[in-house]
Image (cartoon, rainbow, N blue to C red):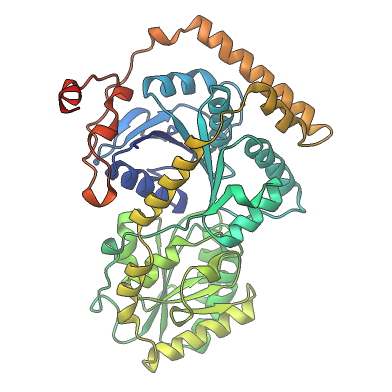
Amino acid sequence: MPYNIAMTSDFFYPQPGGVESHIYQLATKLRDRGHKVIIITHSYQTRHGVRYLTNGLKVYYVPFFVIYRESTFPTVFSFFPIFRNIIIRENIEIVHGHASMSSLCHEAILHARTMGLRTCFTDHSLFGFSDAGSILANKLLKFTLSDVDHVICVSHTCKENTVLRAALDPSMVSVIPNAVVAENFQPDPNAASKTHITIVVISRLFYNKGTDLLVAAIPRICELHPSVHFIIAGSGPKAIDLEQMLEEHMLQDRVSMVGPVRHEEVRDVMVRGHIYLHPSLTEAFGTVLVEAASCGLYVVCTRVGGIPEVLPSHMTVFARPEEDDLVNATSRAIKEIRMGRVRTDKFHEQVKSMYSWTDVAERTERVYEGICRGERVGLMERLKRYYGCGVWAGKLFVLCVVVDYLIWVLLEFLFPRSNIDIARGWPRKAVGTGERSTRRDRSRRREGVLVEEENARN
């Protein structure tokens, strides 16, 4: 049975990244399976209002103030009027939020539950438990997930982390990993240099991505291996540290910094290398590792978070998140490549058989089916759930929910649903026979369209 789904997050195109790619690919495959999917995110510099992507995916770029790393300023209630208008216009049944640090995601789930909609949340990150930022983020997550229908995590490590942070029942958390469009990451044996080993790094240049480790390790690797060159792609506040390191050690001729690259250009950068280096300090999954292996690169990465779950051992060399171990692991990988012990030419087909967005969409669809079969929860039951979140936090959460409910009642009175135009939907794709869903099951009445031939067929 097809559903009308709204995916909500602060993180979406044109910004590149793993969460952004995940939302786009999942939405595309769900549309291929006959579902209606829209994206709700904040406006970017050149994108405002409603846009249609090339495959017909509809995106609402809502004008909200961005405060840090593309996260909007949390207002709790000011998003409700426009969110309600979008939900009614598009006949949305399921709201699917992405990313723990997305304010729009948390607010959308709160408002959706107030409106009686089904909700789902996907966590893409790992967080600690001791520093002030993590404590606040965990309390916010507990608030949101106290009244969500189901949670999806991208790795088993991520699931354990989320269950502990939000005090969840593990049975309501599923693990559905990221995937890769293998056809977009074909290897090219002729693109890489035949005279020297090239190590590729594609990452946001932030502390949590291990940029400080990279700054410390590159001079030592270059000193140990005179024929090794680096290509570094990405942007961020740590880029200045890399540039200063190149100046200090005079490595400009061996380290090329190409700056930010669009997702469609990632493959062209990767195929120029032999090894992919990923020094991250924390990672829930690491889609870029799958993309690198698909391009035929030998992967050197830190053994943190969900990274050990991503690729089999013959494709990777693991290191502790320490300078010495990272240098040693990279040296081992360079030696393996030089001696021809690693069959990187086999990686692409192996990755293609392991990861598929179609499989991710099918598993997500089963989550939707499960939450739509569940019983609906009334306001008093919701308040009980929030009240149990803490001595002081519980009372604050209850107050937020009550105010949200009163705002909803006021909006229903001031702006009746009957006065909101229903948006015409993009034509749904016919569902393949292997998915066993007929055109009749696609239920066009959700779009406000009456299909007379259905009666004749019945």
